[in-house]
Structure formats: structure tokens, C-alpha cells
Image (tube, rainbow, N blue to C red; front, top):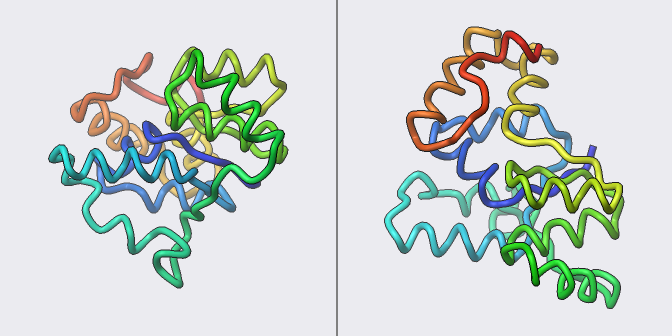
Length: 167
């Protein structure tokens, strides 16, 4: 499955040093150049958990697995301009790319999820990725709950404190 992630998804997994879980669950993960810029801004603002992310981003690193992509055609650019009136730049660019290329969109933002559904874009988020990690055997339920607990301690506002109900 190809999916494009917004900054929040990357942040949640980076903040807990669990970015590899995202890689192991989602076949191909992309980030837009706007999301990458937000990550770089975060580094400048002291979000040290992003340190070293360049080594994970292709083409910045030849063996990077997070694939950097940009808005490519008139359709994506037009949709981005439309979406940017109600969404942040990273979410708008990611959703425009997902909608036009038929990719899944990874976000926890309620407004972005609603707009994605209106555009018939498949959506998942942090909880969905953790649930898939359990279902695929990447993490045990206990391990996934520990990751979720760490994310909550780092500031993630999760509607659940355990994934048991969702698995």
C-alpha cells in the first residue's frame, strides 16, 4: 500500500523512537515537501526527536525509506490551493497528492480526515497503524500499548489508552 503521511503521524512515531514501526506496517510511505519543511521547522524549534530523520528520507539518503514527493501536476496544485483554505499546508499538500494519485492518507487531524472521506481517500492514523502493527505481528498488543502510552506522554491526544478494544 502506498500512503502519504502528514507531520503529526511522523511526529508521533519519532517522539517515541518508533518510526520503524511505520516502515514495517506501511509498504511505501511518502511525505510531501511541505511536510518535510514542517519537520525541519520543528527541528529548528527544538523538537530534537526529529534529529537524524534525513537518513530515513529518500532521495536525501540513498537507502532512505520515507519517500519525499512534491505536488506534480495542475490537478494536484489546484486541489492543494483549494484545500489550503481550510487545512494546514502539510495536510493540504499530502491530501491533494493522496487524492490525485489514489494513495492512502495518514493523519490524525479530524478536519483533514473529514475532507479526505469527502474526496473518497482512504484514511488511517496513529491508532490504525498501531492496530495494524499488532495484527501483522510487528508488535504484541502489550508492546503497542506501551508505544501508545509513550505517545500520550509525549503529547498525543489519543481517544484510547489501550488498543485492546480496536484489535
